[in-house]
Length: 97
Image (cartoon, rainbow, N blue to C red):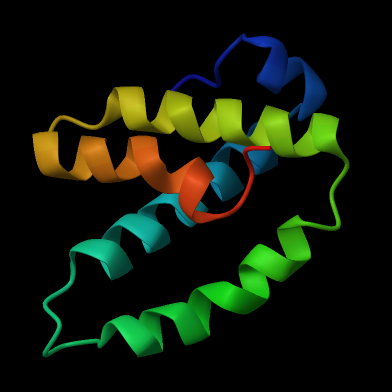
């Protein structure tokens, strides 16, 4: 899979950034779409809250760049439900101002 060539890719260069954005997106999508019996919404938030807090330490420009990478990950999703959840991931992670 090729790394995107958008402004986000210019801000976060290299395959590691792309891979981390895809991994983060996948974790959020899996948690969000998991059966409430498998992982409760409260447990999901316990997992995500420290991540959200860490991401708030990024500059506004870096949060925007990461949101762009996550949106590019969403574009690659072929399952409509996963794609919709992936599109919501930047908001879920508090990346949008």
